[in-house]
Length: 448
Image: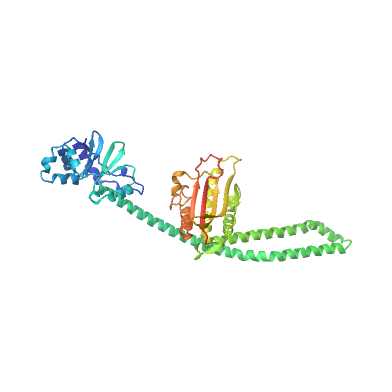
């Protein structure tokens, strides 16, 4: 039952609806809701009094023995009173008689419903009901009234927030793209400068090996032909440990050759990763792209993470190699971060593991090259799995994550390559060390 004092108290709140505090996820309970209800047995003059006291009141909630019967809006009530003999008929009769004469399709919505979703439902109503207030259920059998005008103003504010957010995201993505392009150019330049002297060293190592062997053969022949060996020469042989030198010089050359080959692979991996802005797709070996990525990340993996490779037979795949490398780096880096968090509290018997597997599968009437990257970390909580590809969404501390890695990866795979990026995760407690696989990212690339 309403009171005149309660109606008067509502008026000051209308000047400050708190629209500046709204967010994209705001619900109806953040809006101004009218707590006005009347029993259906009360006369119509009580409703008239309430509407007169508060000119902004959108209507009243009608109850029957405490249960919700429906709602009568200000517009419908005044229309009834404006009919011939309306004042005489409805002012003294129970409000239920008026309610039964008015076509009523009351929209009842829970208070935790999003403002955007409620506005959508309201605008989907028939034209004669589009301006009707909404009944909001606060809790079972507790109702409030929401003015449709206030709802649309709130929706407009949220639309403005969404537009601003999209603009910010667009700017951030442009900055990130520009940053990656600049980084790619810098890495390509550095790799080129490193590769020149490395190729010089690699090209001369073979000559150095041959020349060293020639000197060793000459010394051996001299020792065979000259007998006895002069004492001064023999002293020098002992001083320089000629027997050890013969064996070690070849080992040094072999070590230099292996080191040079590894350095060439690293430089080529950097050059491959720097081609993020490639203008056209090329048929590449996915395994080679994976190996280049793993080589770049080797320093983070080698100490405490076991790397398992289950490579199947894949044909060349047409794609942007640099962009694909970026996807691999983002996903594997996230797996490493999750594992390192768990390694810090894990018993010595537990082994952090990343598994990379590839195969060709048939789905949706076509063939796909599939790359799966799995880890046995703590998994992704179910409540946020649907948001991990959102721009700027991150669970990492401030300064350690931008929320762009997986969002850009999803865009690269789904839009640039017309593929799919799926995630399967079983969320475990951080201290649960029994699971073999907690999170798996599946990259599906279409084969021509």
